[in-house]
Image (tube, rainbow, N blue to C red; front, side):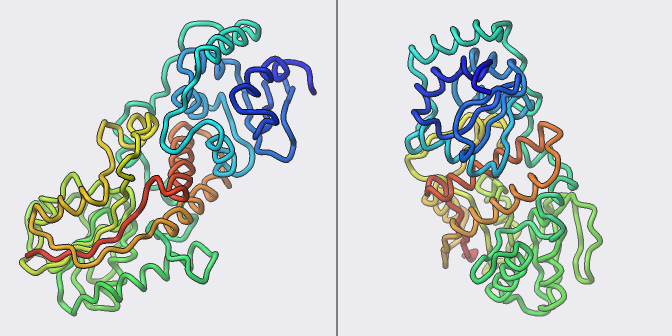
Length: 364
């Protein structure tokens, strides 16, 4: 259909996104504009336009998607990538001109979308994804693999193989000895902890809230121990904000003990995104830069010995998790928030706006 709500939206969208449109838009009445060869954005409810009326730009789009008033058909990374090419330059936030805002108001009036500002979804301003995500949702992202690390994708396209290859590489690099005490933070299903105990004879404490049955030689605890003297501390989960508790972690190592950590970082000139602060981190906390993270390690007596960049593997892993989520229903706001986070982070990593680094450090 070329008439209907979509036709009324076309002048506004082409002015904001360009002509031809980089995406297809289908409205709640079935009308559509744009090429069938482009990603499809579905406006399921005119309330989505009302959200953009009140909050033009990124936060209005996020709220509409999290609530299900706006949907995406097909690969979400491809769809968001098409929008990012025209809505942003680098790390700049989405900006609308005064004419754009007036056109949004005029279009909203014509489509009957004017009204009070809708409430923000409950996922906004909460404790953040790490605090609110149940084990079942992590399992869905892992797609039955039972591992949630950044995969090592050299020579494979299979997520399970990438995860196993990564664990093998890390175990060889860590090279703990029989009887060494190891603490793994944010251990998930304790797969890597089990490997260290089984193949290298380590005594491993795995910090996880997951209901996992530990392997022999692995002790599972729900929180970071208050005290201890470990030969090695491992922190591999990509979203763990270790930079905020690095002094506590250093206090758990014996002198000469090793820290093997993966830390997401942002570029020096990166701009904090509202979506990241309001939905993902649940606070005004920001990711560190690589330089500030190394300085934080040095400040607590950790001497960095090796640094490896994992940006490309990180992006590919995020795409894999996003694809796994999309294979099932997106029935709640938390799942939709995760899908947005995975897709936008993958795109940011591919563009070099954020990175993931693996650092090996020794306590002096």
